[in-house]
Image (cartoon, rainbow, N blue to C red; front, side, top):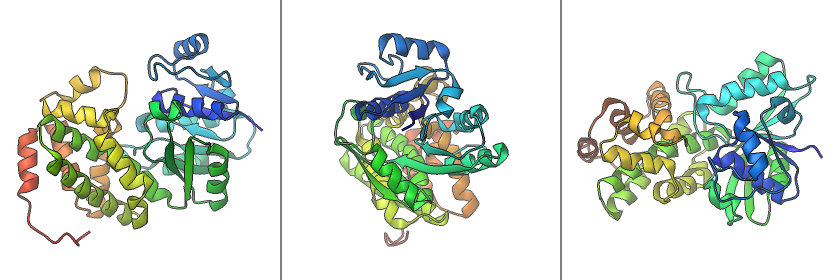
Length: 337
């Protein structure tokens, strides 16, 4: 059995590597910065992104893409804005022209192109003249809890049913249960859009509002996620599952959510530069709000919460004004999706 590769040594990539190694699998973990790879190898801990978690002996950190390219499958856990560059480098580093299996653990879309990660992998595979088999891993998964062996459940989706089942069996463990799916579009858009709604949940918390407001936000946010997913061919039931409602609830309510924390700071009047300058961690929803809003506009999908988050993040609209505009929208039937 080839080693499993993890492209990206952020918090979730490191957690995936630790989990896989705990199951007995040899894992090659790629860090973009050589000094980070050396530090992880020396201390057996990723202090920058996942402090307090000792990595099993089976995790081998590296800054060499050639070593990851020899693995199968490769889990890609880099931020969406760096996903294309990472995949392009990986494909260029791979020996021979055989097929490669890429599993996206990235919850986002490219802002400029609005491409989902599956589309990025396809485009880069064509450009490199390589056959790429693709799957996406998503669901309610805080990195620190996964790494500590806390019971976690997620979904793995692929347009190739056999691949989804194969990866489900390979990655499942007593503490990490995976369900398979064929709805790549729904799983990808669910994971990307929930980050934007989670920023809104942080705004609710930052304004000192209560459970009534948060429950309404999560419910109406789920409507937005579902509308967008269906418009692009996703299945409605996906959004009632782990990659939809499950991930949305965790990210909106969990104290470890970076997107929710960003929303709290927005409500406090912090600027985008101030929020992003305070941490090396990436809150995907900050950049992805633009991409999601553009996707929605292109298909004529109404996403009022997302639009208000874009206005708050990039136009400095106040949280109170945004809330007031949402509350004064035209009345309609809840049955309208």
